[in-house]
Length: 186
Image (cartoon, rainbow, N blue to C red):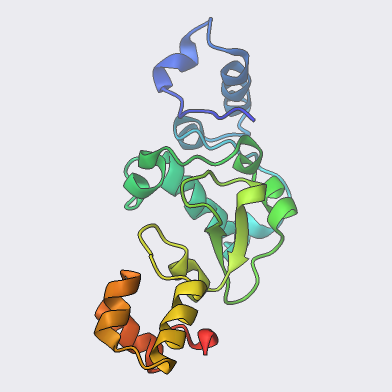
């Protein structure tokens, strides 16, 4: 899939703009795209799906995903678009995102399986906020490590030694052993 960079408003009058951009400009002029959507590289058309008008959780999730990756003024842009994370071309149309992901289940959030990869069907899923927190960049704990912590503790190894051996924060080891963190590893 190809990706579309945000359009420079200056390009809208350039006759030799590439065919995709020419089509976008044509659709914008035909009032199917707003100027802001074209400037930000957001390519969704006014389709009948009922989500945009009502700002459903699914639509707001999609809109936020687009903003994180395309709007340099968005608070978290540096962690997404600023790192080169993009939204696949197909998902720049809300109805395609909705078709691929379905309606956002209650209590779930959009998560990328690989945080260094793009927003695209084979890399995204609906997860709980807890699962998503564990899938952040820099998180060193995993279910396997939590199980090792519990196993070592049951084997009589001290908490500081467990932390040192596994390279895990001492306080995290304590929370795992006390059942305050990674309870499913019990």
